[in-house]
Image 1 (tube, rainbow, N blue to C red):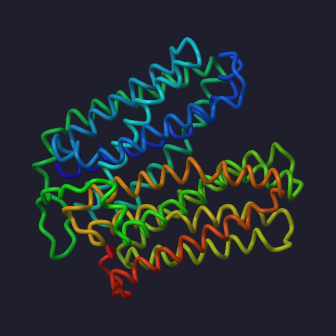
Image 2: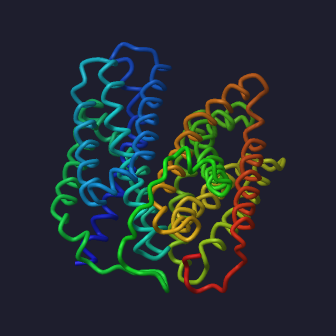
Length: 399
C-alpha cells in the first residue's frame, strides 16, 4: 500500500505544477476577451501569491489539527474549484476573487506534501517529486495551446480543473493509507510523526538559522523568476535574438530544471543533499559565466539550460534537509516559513529587476543571476557553518 500512497503523491506534484504556468500561457488570449489591459494580469498573479504565502504560514497549524491527508485532499478540492471558476468567470474581478482559493490550495498542498516526504522518504523521492512538478509546469502551456487551437482559454481551464478533480478523488480514496503504510526513514530516526512544536512564523524568523535558510530559498527562487520573466527580453534587447526564438528559451530553462532534478534523484543515493546543492551551485556559476562571456548567441540557450540545471537541486534538497536542520518536530512550521519566503522572493525580486533593467538595460540579466547565485551560496555556507555541519561521507543521500 505504501507504493499506492507514493504514486498519488507523485501525481499530486504533477498537478501542483499545472496551475503555476497555466495562467501565463492563457493570459494573452484572456485579457482581450475580458476587455482589460495586458498589465492587469500581474494583479491576478499577486493575489495568488499572497494566498500561497498565507496558506504556507498557516499550514503547520492546519496539518497538526487535521493531518496531512485531509489537508491535501481539501486543498486539491479548493484548487480544482478555483480552476473551474476561472473557466466560467464572467469578468476580471472574478479572476482576482478566484485567485484567493487557488493560492490557498496550492500553498497548503505544497507545504504539506514537502514536509511529509522530507520526514518519511529518501532524498531520491524528494528530487523525483520536484521533477514531477517540472513535468506539470512544462506540460501545462502545451495543454492550453491545444485548447486554444480548437476552442477558447476557458476550455483549457476546464481541462485543468478536470485533472485536479481526478487528483482530488485519488487523494480522498487514499485517506486511510496515510497512517497505515510504512515509510523509508532516515537511519536512526523513528517512523512515527513527532508532535509538531508550536511556533509562530514571527518567532521562527527571529532565529538566525531560519533567516539564512529563508534567504537561500528567496534568492534561489528569484533566479527562477528572473529567468522565467526576463530571459526573452534579455535575449532580444541585449543579444539581438529574434522575438519568436527568444520566446522559446523559457522552455529551455525549464527543461534544464526538470533534467537537473531527475539527475539529482538518480544521484541522491550516492551523494548527500549538501553535496548535490554544492555541485548544483558550481554548475550555476559556470552557466552565468557562459552568459556573461562574449560568446556567440548560440551559447545563450546552453547557458540558460545550465542555469536551470544547476539551480534545480537546491529547492528539493533544502526541503529534505529541513527536519535535520531544525528538528522533526519543527519541520512543518519551518518548511511553511521557508516556502513563504520563496513566494515572497518570486513575487518581489523579478519585478524589481524589471524596473532596474528598464532604466539601465537588460545586459544586467546575467549580472543579476551572478549576484543572486553568490547570495545563495553565501547563505547556504553560512547556514551549514552555523549548524556545525561538515561534509559527510556519500551514501545516505539525506544530509
